[in-house]
Amino acid sequence: MTYIRSDGAGRSRLLAGAATAVALAALFACAGCSPPGAGSSAGAAPGQSMITDPVTTGQVAALGDTTLRMWADQAEKPLMRSVIPAFEKKYPNVKVDITYKSFDDLVATVVNAASGTRPPDLFQGNIGHAVDGTLVKARLVRPLDDVAAAYGWITGTGASTLAPARWNGSGTAFGSGNLYGMSPISEVQGIYYNKALLKKVGLRPPRSLADLEKALPVVERAGEQPIMLGNSDQYAATHLFSDLAVTHQSPASVRDWIGGRAGSTFVTAGNEKAAATMADWAKKGYFGPGYDGLSNEDAVSRFAKGTGVFFVGGSWNGATLDPAKFGFGALTTGGAGATASPWHISASSKATPAAVAFLAALHTPKTGQEILDTGRLPVVTDGVKGTNSLQSQTLDALKRTIAAGTQIGYYDWTATDMLTVMGGKLQEVMAGRESGADFTEAVQDAWQKARRDR
Image 1 (cartoon, helix red, strand yellow):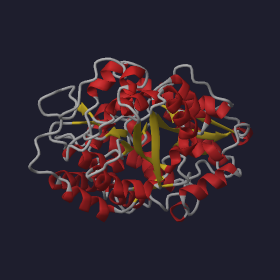
Image 2 (tube, rainbow, N blue to C red):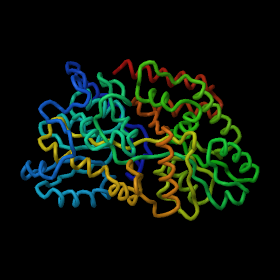
Image 3 (cartoon, rainbow, N blue to C red):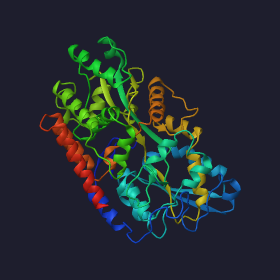
Image 4 (cartoon, one colour):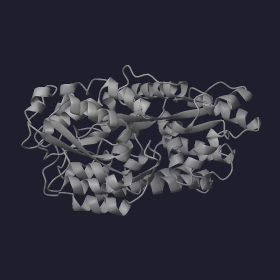
């Protein structure tokens, strides 16, 4: 999938460029290749050595003077300003040459770059079939099971966040199988609330979906807008839907469907109940007037200025909110979210020890704190502390969400047109023009078609 990311700071994504993604997938399907990871459950790429222990400075020094070529989203610039100098100081024979691209440009060109005659050694991809799936099928990225085992990522903090970078043997489904990437960045969804308005209507911060459902009519009767929503881009409502849906059913079943696991279905009682809730809230006016004509960014801006008691969204929305005025909490039985774009090592890299060492540098408590300090959430949360109340609440929500196993990912990872299908159909449900059953069946049909086309 290809996304547009607002200001590079967090998800705020809108599906775009589907034609480009489909073309890339067709070009690099690599039908004659053997299955990804074939012959090894913890393997390295052909011609590369297995990693059995953390890489040492001596092993990196043995490379001689080396340039580690990297491609990254421009959103990584603030973090890299501290990580790269520290890395080059620890490994003085390595010079990091990093190319930053807009998120749009990165996902549109990284597969071509990885398949070229001089691919970057280390680069970011994008979770889902269009980019990471294509990289895996074409055997362009090195399996990282051995690296994860050597560094303790499989059992350590955030181990479950590796799942979106795992692929099955045929490269047609993700969520389990061999590991091909890692991300140091995580995201969580939950409930933002206006402290003053909440106090005005006599309510305490909600800590569950049940609390939120009890609060909404109280807020409405008090003359305040219950939920600030901007859904012209169609993804904001799908995020809210995912929080409801994961609360009403097994998170594992949702992850399986998102990953494309055979036999998975979107036609479930939990999804129909979540759709019915969205329709009910819309009918009762809980989202306010004109929400389908308002962008998510505009909705966040209005919420920041005092419109709406609640805003249900992701951790990336908190950057513009005043910690003194706003709070955040996860749905303790749900609270969806995901990791950000994974980093991959090229299967043909000649500087693998240096690339592994760089990945390890991204997966430490020190870097975790730096990630939080630059406005995002880290996968490694040990010893990481927020610098204000909102940041601390969001970090705590992330920890609880990961512990609960509800970091399911995003529905639009499943197919290049899934956001268009799901977002459009959900708008129809919320407008009362389609039923929850119609919605779930249409989404499942799109999922089945995408799976057949792979």
